[in-house]
Length: 132
Image (cartoon, rainbow, N blue to C red; front, side):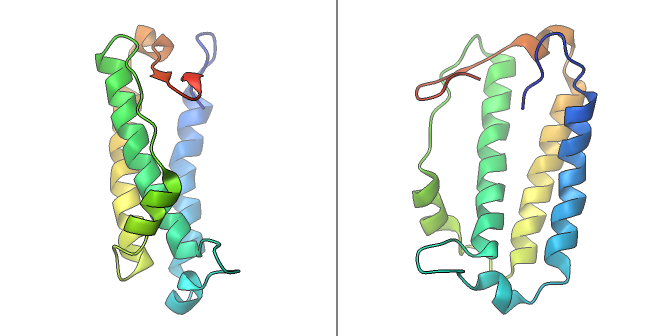
């Protein structure tokens, strides 16, 4: 969630930080085979969900940078299912995927921490979702 112009971004940033701790806690003790198991045919395994989080964090990082650097950029949509099908199995171990996600999340947090007052009010336009 992007803060509104009158809101304090601090609680949102803290939630983004705690998500990393929560996700690491959930994955670190889990059995690798269990993380790869699909709960039902066609449903994403926990490993695929983590891969999706890593991909989504990457996309949001690019979008965030576009919003900060450009005036109302068009934010390109992506097919989450196609990305999960193609990139969900890139890493042999979900912990490697988690490391990729954490690296991108930390980079995005550094950028968010560096935003100045007027940058919080900037937006981009998603063709399907409108202004973000």
